[in-house]
Picture 1 (cartoon, each protein chain N blue to C red):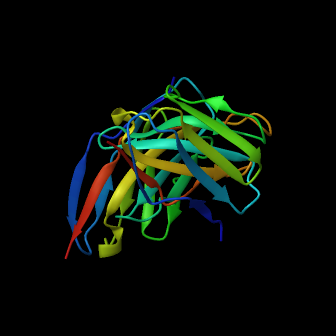
Picture 2: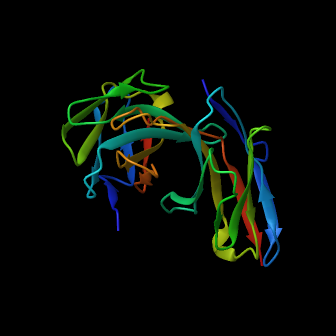
Picture 3: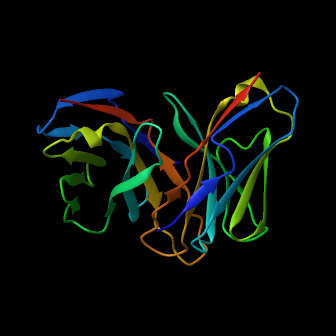
Amino acid sequence: AQTVTQSQPEMSVQEAETVTLSCTYDTSENNYYLFWYKQPPSRQMILVIRQEAYKQQNATENRFSVNFQKAAKSFSLKISDSQLGDTAMYFCAFMKHVLNSGGYQKVTFGTGTKLQVIP
Amino acid sequence: DVKVTQSSRYLVKRTGEKVFLECVQDMDHENMFWYRQDPGLGLRLIYFSYDVKMKEKGDIPEGYSVSREKKERFSLILESASTNQTSMYLCASSPDRGPYEQYFGPGTRLTVT
């Protein structure tokens, strides 16, 4: 079974600064997907960024980037130029590669990191 | 835009009541999920459905059942609600092809008294 660990229950960052959220996972799979989801207060969870394990290049989406270390099983999220709207709960998630259509898309989530951006 | 809706944002029920939580998605997604979200525990999968009338147990199915009679609708049923089922319930859907992003509903905060 896969496990996902987020060791930082809460973090804070000054507006315009950079912050890194940690995530480690445990799996025996070689092909898989990793995700960071964001859940703003009282709002729906949305995808921030995704990474396919077979891709060596780290994914980037505007101010959000990841540091994917496959050998270390680490998948951290870096938020640059933090904004007040980044205040949210952030969840790291793992999904093993789906072999064919209709495959079981079980996603394992971490326990979350609550990020507060301070003005 | 993908839209996933849930029938109630807040629900208060009494112990022993039968509770129905409804979820509807409008993007023709094959897969639908029910999660439970508790502080410090993250999201835990209750049930998953990959097709109409098909279902798979997740990590914590005890005390719950599900129904998927139509592709767009996935219902979570608490046969006899108990206080330890007080929680936030999230529904999600995803397509049957990459990149496998899950789209979430707004959640239902259920309180069982």
